[in-house]
Image (cartoon, rainbow, N blue to C red; front, side, top):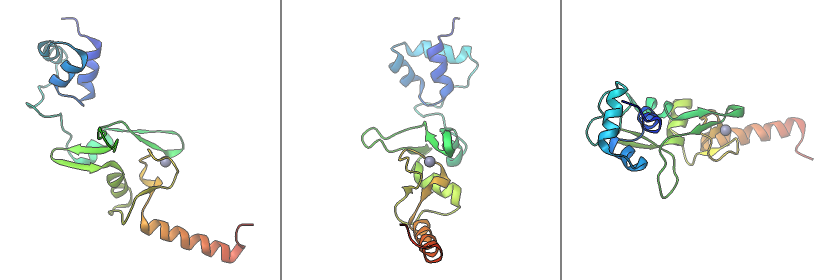
Length: 151
Ligand SMILES: [Zn+2]
């Protein structure tokens, strides 16, 4: 059979179920199923999104490195809030929370802010919590004591 590129692309992306792909492209479910078989891909479990081996894997599958060390999220966003969420089986974790934990090896304390100024950046090293902000303030005031404050 002739494989439709748009169907193949969405199947390979692994984000949508066959039913969702059929709906989005306005094609028959059978066409999506036949395309999947033609591509030699396994059947997704009924009513479930294709899943990754772990929460971290699900995170890493949906990030894209940008300039200056920024990291962009290409995965799921909550429709109303626009919040970036990592989905893995029954877990739903906000992307900044997980990115922070994976980078620093601990959970964030207090609010997570984007130290690089890019509100949609999810590079672990660009995120800060109460502890990091307090440490930065201490470093700044030590610097000012030694070298004088800003003019
Ligand atoms: Zn950044």
